Length: 79
Image 1 (tube, rainbow, N blue to C red):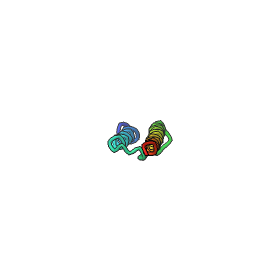
Image 2 (cartoon, rainbow, N blue to C red):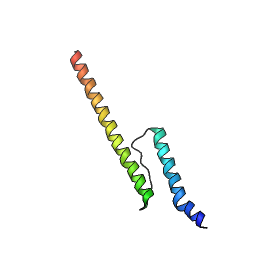
Image 3 (cartoon, rainbow, N blue to C red):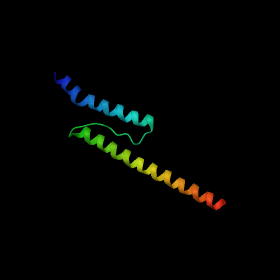
Image 4 (cartoon, rainbow, N blue to C red):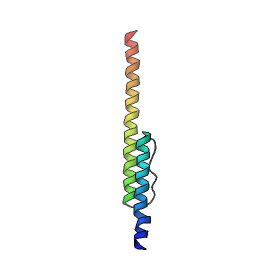
């Protein structure tokens, strides 16, 4: 019974977290987030991953904007 409880409470949550992280990695969609609820280390890990995804998305957005501005400047200079 104890093993089943551990499986339900811990291992299954880590498995779900791993599946969600893998899905985000495969899709390359940095707007997705890990959905884990609770007040434990697994939740803290999910929140840290979500924070990292947010930082990566912000960096990607900033890079896209910079490339767009550079392209516009290049067009103006070639006119």
